[in-house]
Image 1 (spheres, rainbow, N blue to C red):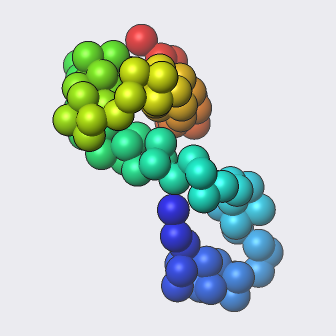
Image 2 (cartoon, rainbow, N blue to C red):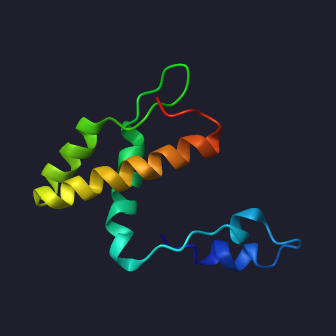
Length: 95
């Protein structure tokens, strides 16, 4: 996740925006999970509100990218954790 020019712009605003104050630290070894989450966000079901990304979609992503089974398990853990946080931030309870 690269903020680039967005971060430079946010640093010019006073008081400092919440987005910059709460900017997550993304370690290089976790970027693959973030990238998967961003791709999979488009797979979530939408009814009365957004739902959790289906487990089947996460598993399919791992299969398409030929991840070893232990990495698919890690991917499920990370994507579901990010998904819960995303939905909670939006004010939606994970379904």
